[in-house]
Image 1 (tube, one colour):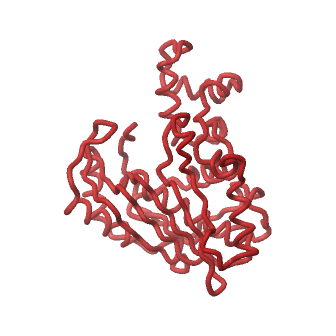
Image 2: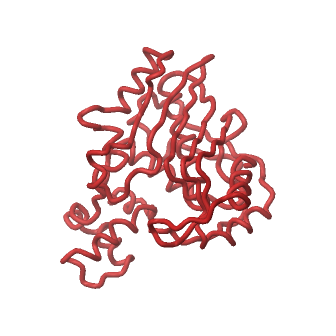
Image 3: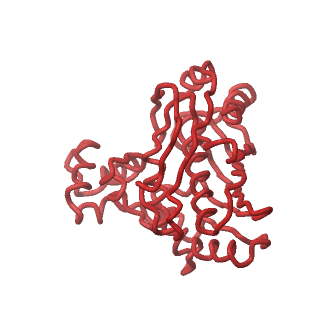
Length: 288
C-alpha cells in the first residue's frame, strides 16, 4: 500500500524526535491523512503479514459492547493482554504469574477473568452505551433514514470515563458520509503507532465500513484515515526501514457473507480474504 509507505517515509524524514508516556521515544508528525478507495481492494498491508484473525475478532468484540479480554483470549487473540496484565501485577492477587500463566487463568476461570480481564469502559462500551446512547444503533438508523445528515458520528472519547479505562481510546471519532449509493467513513485517530497499530487500524475500520455498508444496503466507498500524533517508536526504526525495502504487492479482496443484514449477527466465519500474498511478518515490541 503506497499510502502507508508514504506515511512511513514522511515520518522518518520529517518527524520530530519526542519522548512519550512509555519512555520509549518516537519520531512523530502532527496531522496526517490517507485515503483508501475500497473498490481498489481490501487495504491489508502486504509488505508484512498482518494478523487478520485478530482484526476480525476485535471488531466483533467492539460491536458486541464487550470490554473484557476473555472473549479475545478464548479465540487466541493477544492484542489487549498487556494492559490488564500490568494492572494485575499491582494487585494483591498477583503471585508472580507470568503473562502466559495470567492468560491461561483468564481462559480457564471466568470469575478470575471478570476481575482481572476487564478493561473498563473502552471502545465497545462507548459504541453501545455512551451515557445511555447506543451510538452504533443510532448511526445505522441515520444512514438508513437520514443519509444526507452531517451528524452521522460515533465517538469513543468520553472524558467522564477516561480515568476508568485501561487505555484511553486512540481511534476516537468517526463520521459516515453517503453519496451516489456509496458509504464512506472518516476516522480521526488521536494517536497512531505506525509500525504496529496503523496497519491494523486501516484494515479494521475498512472492514467496519464494509459491514455497515452491507447492513444499510450501500456499497463501500472510501475509508479516510486522519491521524493526530502519527509516530514511529524508536525501537521500530529498523523494522520500518526493512519494510520500506519491500515492494507492495496487489491488494487482496474481502468477501462478506451477503446474507447477514444485522450488524450484531456477523460471525468470524462470515469473512473470507482472497488473494492475500504478504511478505513474512516483522516483529516489534508493544510500548505499554
